[in-house]
Image 1 (tube, rainbow, N blue to C red):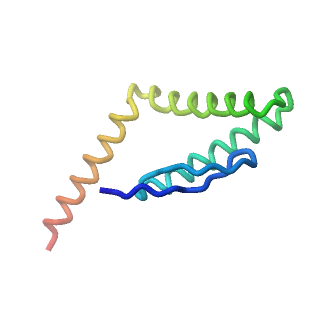
Image 2 (cartoon, rainbow, N blue to C red):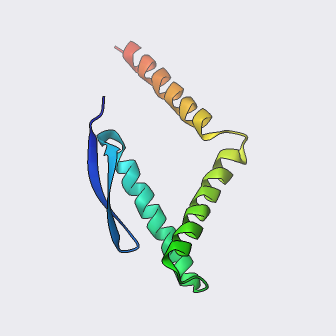
Length: 99
């Protein structure tokens, strides 16, 4: 079982401490980086200046991108993760048989 760790993250210049399992720290940092990229894109558009609105639009853009990916081939994210896990297990089994 993975231990929860408090990770400092910075979004739009504000620092927060977020609890995450050690095994998911890298994913959290990738999510923060993506959110910061999305907020910069919204800010550079220049039409929205309020911080809370910038964050909401950026989050909606990120979720929209995720949904497009998950719906694209009729594959839900959970199904996608299960298929990857199944492939990893199949590879592990095959490699275990190699002398």
